[in-house]
Amino acid sequence: MPIHDQSYRRYAGPRNEPGSAWLVIAAAGIRTLLGRKLFLAVMLAAWGQFFVRAVMFYLSANFPTLNVLAPSVETFRQFFDIQEIFVLFVTVYVGSGLIANDRRSNALQIYLSKPLSRVEYVAGKLGILAFFLLMVTLVPALALLLLEAMFSASLAFLLDNLFLVPAIALYALMEVSLASFTMLALSSLSTSARYTAMLYAGALFFTAAVFGILRGATASSMLAWLSLRANVEQIGDVIFRLPPRFESPWPASALVVLLLIGLSALVLERRVRGVEVVT
Amino acid sequence: MSSPHEPPPSPSRPDGPSFLGSVARIYDLSFGQMLWSRRTVFMVLVVGGPVAVALILRLLVSMDLFDAGGEIDGRPVNIDGPVIFGLMIWGFYLSFSVPLLGVFYGTSLIADEVEDRTITYLFTRPVPRGAVLVGKYLAYLVCAGLLVLPSVVLVFFLVVPLLGGSVGAGFPDLLKDLALLAVGLAVYGALFALVGALFKRPLLTGLVFIFGWEPVVIVVPGYMKRFTVSYYLQGLVPHAMPEDGGVTSLVLRVLQANEILPSATVGLVGLAVIVIGGLALAVRLVERREYVLEQ
Image 1 (cartoon, each protein chain N blue to C red):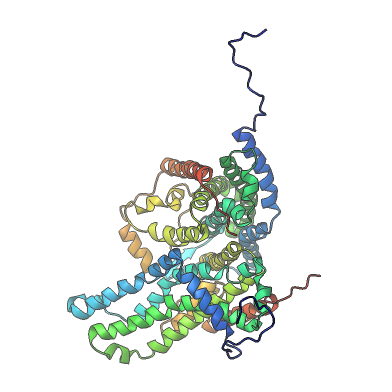
Image 2 (spheres, chains in turn yellow, cyan):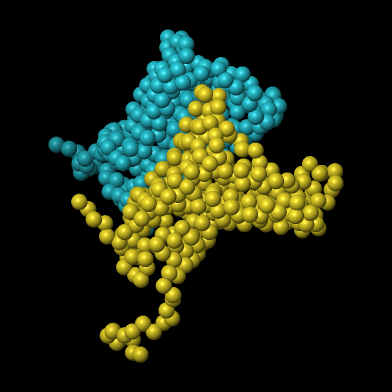
């Protein structure tokens, strides 16, 4: 067809099934972030613990005198505890600008003028954040479990603690869902990625500080449900079949997490719109 | 009549404002912008939280729902107003509010202008580039101080009289705390002004520093901790640092048996070096750097 012919012509390319457009957004976002050197450095640092633990597993499997380094259920629980800080960094780096930048440059209207529903847009953005968060939680934890079996040349640990596989998956999904939904909701509330990042970090550490003060003042951890981090930790202990670290009931923590995810979904439903009606 | 050998008088050129005059002008402009911005809402939330907690504690005590004694990890503890105030200074202000406000405002002194593409308007005015940074830094300091320090005073009067505490006895500590927090705001602000001038994505660097580097390095034996701000601040705090009483604390106590907290003089000198060095480097960077705005 001559290039100068600009008259109407039908789209002749392949047609994707409705509901799969979120994959385009997710894939584009993941590609963009993988091209940033600073982000790759953050991801590499997040995998640092995996490498240290892998060496420990190798030593414990091959040198009986170093049995103290042998893995246990607590090892995997601690792994997630230490990864929390990287979950924060990745959430802030990846998530703070996901919707805020689109709102800032008025790209949201352009997105939603395409054959793309609001749910698909949010799912695509969630997909970007969830992908990288799972890369620093679920993937290294499962890889460690696999490494343990390979280094010890035995499935004994895995079979004795078979619940670890669903426990790791469930905990990682809970942590990632909470971080992704809350960060995305905050991102939809502002046009500044920096402001969003500070709001998220502020909420996380402020609630932890409130709990810390009240714990010190009341000499009790019954108010652990006030802290976002403590809620995740409390549920994590239950998932890993360990004694809960706080005195507050774990269903209260589960309820807070569910409420936060629900509230975030509601905020996203209200804020992600193609047309903003100003009254 | 002038001699034919004298050089002709140079054409008169209006003198630009001095560095200090420029700083004052930028401060004037930025202070109003900072105080009446959406960010102040964030700041009010950060410093209003402790006041709300103090109010709740006071309410609980007045309703006899709060016990002065208790146990933490099996150890009996006796709590009174000044102890709770010390906890709040450590937990809310020194570990949370001051570093967070420093990161938020310090990194945005220049980054905000770049992001909003308004830095061109500032840099084309007849004021030194460094004065822009210093003026904005002073505006941050006054703005943050005006919000943080009254919050501490409110918390002091709400919490210290609880459970037999004495306001009079604790007043000298309040003055020390106020001075310490002002110093903390100045130091973190200067450090993150440098980070903001140096890095393209300063916020992540700032968060990594305050929530990743400082908490880890401060408990490592040796000289590493001297590369943190909190090490120098520790020597000036009139309250004991709270411990969680767990295994970690026990291990740390053994590891740090021979560690010496910096004296007040060392602390002050260290903090002064960070403020002056940070600001000087930031000014130098801003004056030499070419800012290319993204299209």
